[in-house]
Image 1 (cartoon, rainbow, N blue to C red):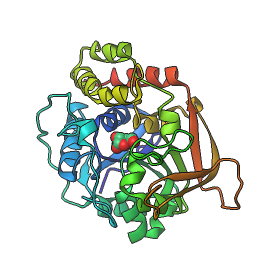
Image 2: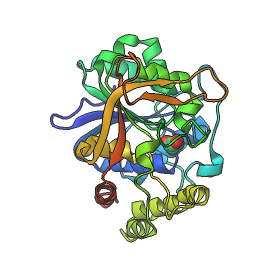
Image 3: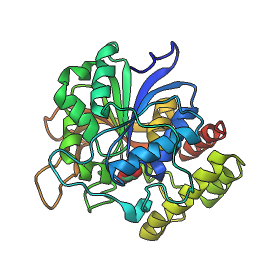
Image 4: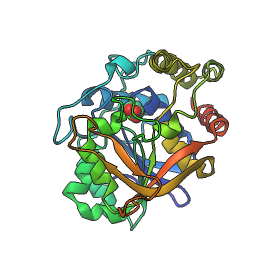
Length: 319
Ligand code: RIB
Ligand code: CA
């Protein structure tokens, strides 16, 4: 059982497939006094589960927070083969930071079982779930124990794309494409869902100056983060021909801390789970042209300067 949330902090669970951008999200969350990270659950995505779980352990130690429990979850989507993204994240998933393996061990409990236990022990609408990878673990929780949904305050996820299109296919973003059925389950679970898609993450690109400022923090976290980001952004800079790359996952943490940085619309979002052409597409009824009920706060705008200033402040709090 995880420690109960302290009185004036927001209890969250981060479900993740580190991934350099996941790494910044995890570090930022662990640095934020407003958040109580009850645990980190690893899922297969950017790299296989064995590596995402390993990376999560490394990151909580890097942050000086070995007290935060890490659990391994699902090693592939329930209904599909796993697709990974070593071409983006490197063989380890956190290439760019030469970090030793963690000394702390994974928790013995499966992430899905732990999430179910933790949610059912919590109050109504108490815990925020933060998926920043394929939503396989979270969907497994909701399918196994649908009653957990009423204990979820909000699911704030990085995933999807609509006006922006996709980054894995012309119409699908990676997290949703890897496990479209899982994303659809999350969108229909009954808990409030907020989605931070490519439409917002691509409006806040990193700059070399910002990465240099991270490195100049002079801490082990700054050195590791800068190394990861230098490696990570090369793919998007080459692909999009932009001056910098998007930093996807940390927007979930920034949204929790500064929702005023963000704008979006509560509307209907559905996921294509059949069509070979548009599999994994998040179909957003932005103009309410259907009678499908609104089920998601779909975010499309961000204060980019505010976001990067917030991230720098959080990273500067770590050793
Ligand atoms: O499409 C971006 C998402 O896919 C991010 O979560 C990144 O880490 C990858 O998992
Ligand atoms: Ca991720």
